[in-house]
Length: 113
Image (cartoon, rainbow, N blue to C red; front, side, top):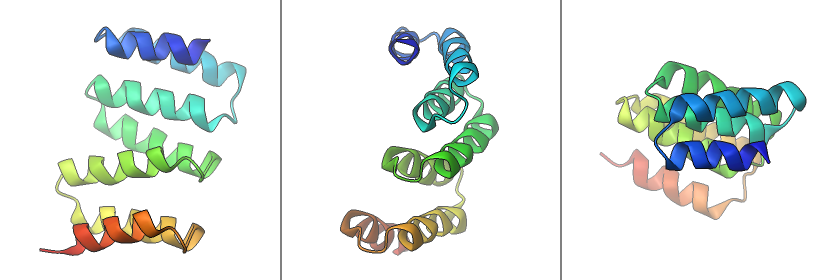
């Protein structure tokens, strides 16, 4: 339910409201990767890239299977011009899931000059 309210807040361009709902979800289920990812998205939408980065890293620690969180972090680093960090994130993911072809291809593409 709260995740849906986060989505509505983001869709309506109300990142502060989305952050409020995401924080409430995290209070209710602190080990939820999905709630953590919702907060990261709301922080990024609100322009808090440092907060979004911290939350994405926490999301990945909570639930490494959330591929979207990894991709969001890679593209956040891309936006910030942090090429070595984006490759490090892909390498970390591939250590967790070495057979993932999509992430291997993404790393190949992003590694090219």
